[in-house]
Image (cartoon, rainbow, N blue to C red; front, side, top):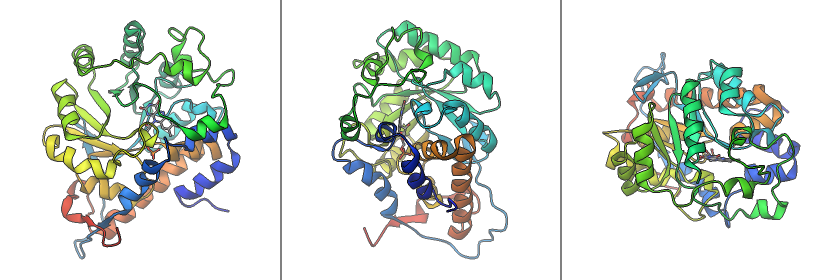
Amino acid sequence: MELITLADYERAAAETMHPQAAAYCFGGAGDEVTLRDNLDGWRRLAIRPRMLVGVGERDPGITLLGKPRRHPLLIAPVAFQRLAHPDGEIATARAAAATATTFCVPTLGTTSAVEVAEAVPDAPRWFQLYVFRDRGVSRELVARAVDHDYEALVVTVDLPIYGVRVRELRAGSGSLRPGRVPSALAAGAHGAVTRDQITALIDPDLRWSDIERFADESPIPVVVKGVLTAHDARQALDSGAEAVIVSNHGARQLDTVLSGADALSAIVAEIGDQADVLVDGGIRRGTDVVKALALGARAVLVGRPIVWGLAVDGADGAQRVLEILLAELDNALALAGAPRAQDLDASFVTPAPWR
Ligand SMILES: Cc1cc2nc3c(=O)[nH]c(=O)nc-3n(C[C@H](O)[C@H](O)[C@H](O)COP(=O)(O)O)c2cc1C
């Protein structure tokens, strides 16, 4: 059967992935209330379209961190991508390059940020940082990313410790098979081979003062990923961040937290006139992207769907997933009567009558 939607890729990936890998990639925390709500949050918004505005020419372009971008999609940082396909992060980078999509390369990649940059130099890229207890290792990872033309540092702040991920616990110990240990960690992993050991490297005592230090030292913009309140978004800016990503980590950390869709507006109201606000979680349709931009997000990140594309068909699958979403976005911009993505505002959405 031809795969036409991201949901088609989800089903196909579920059939091909190893059960343990699938549990890791598909699952959320706790009872997965927030996992479901990440999708529902966007569905609870209705679009208020405008007619006869002339949509023959459309432009999904936006400006992010002061730079014009062809479209508002980014690839979210997703750890251990070789669990989905042997080409892992390199395949994702190829898909990113083919679609002009910025790829947030994860600290816990199964291919190092340096190798990704060298293998696919034309992939637009940001580096996602988990701050380790050993700050020397973190500084070294950042220095290498800066040396390899990473454009921004995405500091993830919502994983001081690991969430209670029931699917993963049921699926087994969480060991990574040989060759799938994050090579980026060679300097600091001290032979770690399980997810628990690897996540134990992360500093649970990270504070805003640490963000301030990273922002002070970083020659590239710092983006704080994982805030859900206006208070924390303001803290991020006060600590030197140039953008924030409204995110609940794909519902993998604390269950029953707010969805991105529900957290976004308050954060845009607090800092939207001073900094870029991005959002992720549950973006599966072009209409979801339109709604996020209408609520004031500058751009959106996509996590699991990239994994599904990888699992189904490596780089080509990940590219196809992005192309489907971009085609749906183009369609939604036309039919919503917002031919330029930059023109979307809150008047294009309303709480859905069916919520
Ligand atoms: C398998 C998997 C691994 C992830 N690993 C990371 C990570 O290493 N660092 C990080 O900041 N976020 C990580 N995330 C969260 C994503 O960056 C993103 O916030 C989330 O997946 C967005 O939701 P979506 O999957 O519904 O698109 C991961 C998500 C998944 C599904």
